[in-house]
Length: 346
Image 1: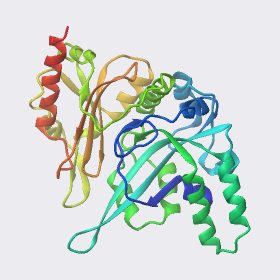
Image 2: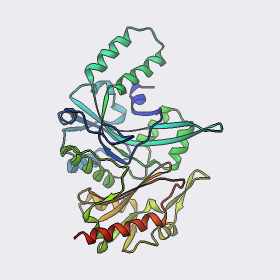
Image 3: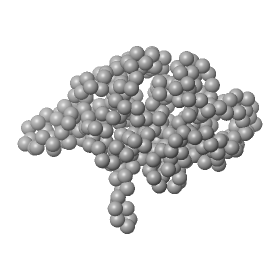
Image 4: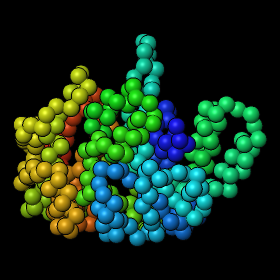
């Protein structure tokens, strides 16, 4: 297995993350960047390693419209070798993830899968120094690859991250497939709900703007922007993947059913419309301005956002935990109260 693969994906660790995070860490509590870290990032060329499910020209259009904080280059996954970019000249943006295995109180284990898109920079001087020391040691090939990965990841700095929402076929595969097979699926198959060109455009747009303004952004929050009041007179668009209800007992996604949307939005007091994921994405890419729901589930953590399709601004965000895997009518009803509050603040 290539070191590339090992670095990119699926360590077995114990952490938790948020849907979008711009900051030096993506767990616990938000923190400030160390002095100079963002300047280092802004002085790099960002290497984007993206899924093969879309052609290169699609990604070029997205980045041309959204990414200005650094120069950038798209590198095909099959051509990517992280060792080529272990230099202070580069930052890396790529799909990644991990499995979390937890020992249960009364025996057995539970496994959680986390998948995301990461932005990092690397301390090349420290990495090369440690790799040089490792080269002089007699260790097995397997142990050497593992140690190389630890050295590289141990000398990296987090810049930004957003969650990508896996479909259940990929979740099931993660339970038994090896790392190389999982990486291959992530980069070559359509295994993510929110990995569509339009949604990527808005994710990159938001992260680019936050980094340019040197703002830390933390997703374990419930808040809204004054712009939310516009939903009182503007239709809210719902992506069709929200028609799918996840069955926790069977550990699988159901079929797309209209009644699922009708149920969870039955308390919404304003106009909404369900559109296909493709149509939603195409309209975002065209530059049309409207408001839509962006929903991500990671295990039992749920992230419900309302996004301005033109600016990429998140005007509402709700962080939901609990034993359920799905959005409920009470979560949508909460949007009503925030719209009323936004109107009163005129």
